[in-house]
Length: 287
Image (tube, rainbow, N blue to C red; front, side, top):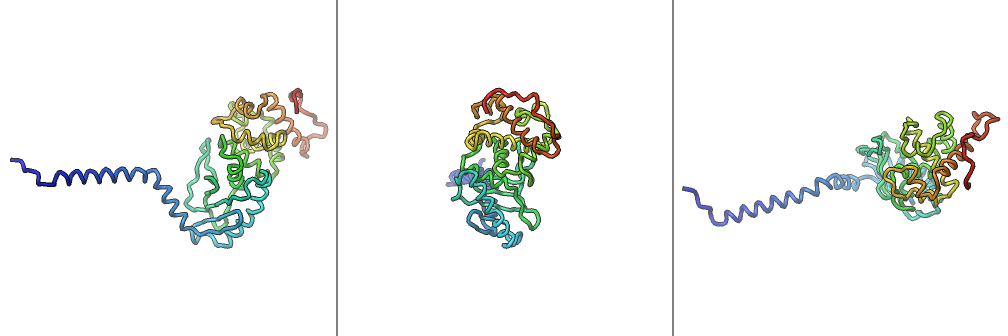
């Protein structure tokens, strides 16, 4: 003979089921936002140093206040120089730099680890040793996004940030690119964008030439032309999309790039004195 359920037993089961379902639904956001919550709590407990344009954070005991202050002091002139190049558009913002030994680097489109990540005005990077290090392009990415909005393509954004900084590993961009040009020969814009034939084996060479090409666009068209390219939505940039964004033609695109590049080559000590403009450079079209 089966036992009769006691009064209230059924309702208790329903209540238990309800709480189990509620707990399961409550756990779903934690699966997606748990990492962000832990990061927020971790960063809220960090030591910090504030200046006019920077807020420097790191876990307590990892950097001295002197090291943070020195880093911020070196960064202030950089902020002003980059902001001036953008027309003093972002002088009211403050860049937050978070140095974290536990930082996990994101990867670019070619699955290479990036030295930092940028979220609005916050830069996160890995702290290695007792001396904080951060590429200048990180600051440039923050200022570009603040002045021009979010970029249409991550690769173009990184090249544009290097253009804004104006140098490549301590050397002026044009001169650094000219050395690559001497080593590899001239590469058309199509090779910089997608490199379908694998003409540029080194990702660093491609990044440098890409930044040099942005510098050429700035020299011929000014910052407004660079901004058009920066903000254009291009999942996979190619010559067709770039010419549409800039309102030009493929021939003109390559002609100006080759002219600009040759001007740097002509000024290099290693170039022969009697060298002349390459014969394959089309000279028709407007400058």
